[in-house]
Length: 434
Image (cartoon, rainbow, N blue to C red; front, side, top):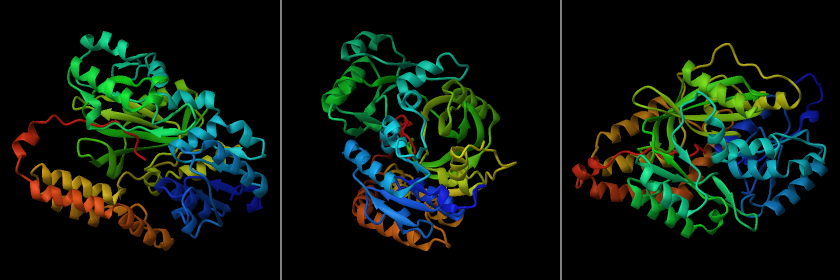
């Protein structure tokens, strides 16, 4: 524990406790003797099942009912005498940052920057505008005000490009948050296709009229990240990772991931963090291109989905963050491991297998099975067995049928259109790894 001898002095409410990252925060702090309450919009969340959580709270969904969620959160904090509240996922972090003053009025330390600072990382248009003044390579990024703007600039762009929302979650006029991801239908290979894609995105999402999507040059390569805890614009503790497998195969959420070290990427990330004057957990994501350059793709000013890998590799981000909230400067361990491999998403890895089989790669089955020998399932902890047991059951109940159908379809069609499939250019979907 920290210098205060009373553990109750550091009682912490961990939000998003049903996510991998949320469960990791619960476990990290609970192991250190911090009394943890696991909060989620799901009954019997994974964090609530952990032996390291003292109690649990179920609340309104932050994205669907942000005001009701905050009302409930204020009541919980006021009644529970908490030292800190820590949001983990993207939507919750945004809602909490926007209403930070109200939550702080309960006497609780809120584990996010003020919204004026947080939105610099949250809004990709502001992030890349800031990055233009740096030496960090960035893809050409345009922030049109309307479809008419896109029509005017379409002929002058280098293709392919990707249409992506300015934030992962975008508010509608009623305050609800809508999730946006980059998919195969987000890319355009020419002016006409770009205009059609942009028009379709706006037609399907009325709330994007106020915050039109970005148009960004496509960058090929491998997704890598520098993550950690910053203070006043300086990385105080950091870790680096790369995705060994993703779903979809061409790029997306990681399914198998490992640590790495690269000084050049670390320096690029440090320059971004300095420009943001950031304090707290942060993820700086890059695309490592075939010509050995690192292009800035995204910044997430919050916990990230693969934070358990950093913890298992020796950089205990949740503990360092809580110490920071108590006024202590985080420090990096002398060295971290870069040989730990996590299998993050079993259902995602099965989808990866289905995709590879459908593209005519039967040896992918051997690679899939081999991962069970060298990669650690991210939920599995012998000292905390209940979440380890329940997580696969939850997945089976929620995802198994869908994934089964995808695999069956892949097996039926595998190899039939192999030559056609291989002619398609691989695209890396620049999505957050949650």
